[in-house]
Image 1: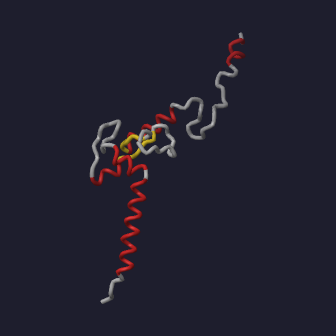
Image 2 (image 1 turned 135 degrees about the vertical axis):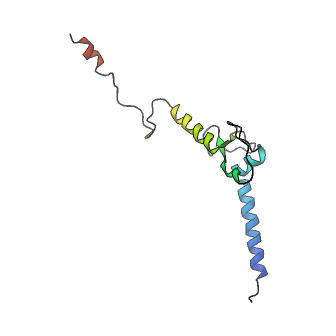
Image 3 (image 1 turned 90 degrees about the vertical axis):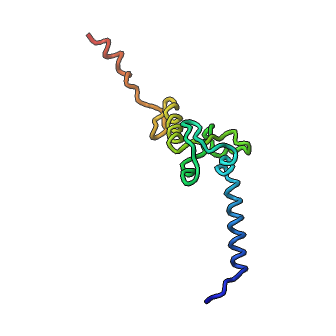
Length: 118
């Protein structure tokens, strides 16, 4: 039977603890510590394995804006989060939802000429 290397095990444990600390510094981990595990829209409660379905929504839609107090975040279930982003896209006026470009076609461009005909 092979002997286990204690220094290798210590390094593994240290790396695991360091990785956990880094994850906890991430905005999702901070948001989960700040807020109750409830969707801010539909009110569904989360715990255990279902917690992975609870996401962090950036209220200003800027994923780089992560204040430590969590004022730009709200916890939403994956369904409400998708719905919120679709509503944001739909509310952007004059833009093609697939390309993001402004409209160039005017369906009424020739209407005045058509109305002048006898």
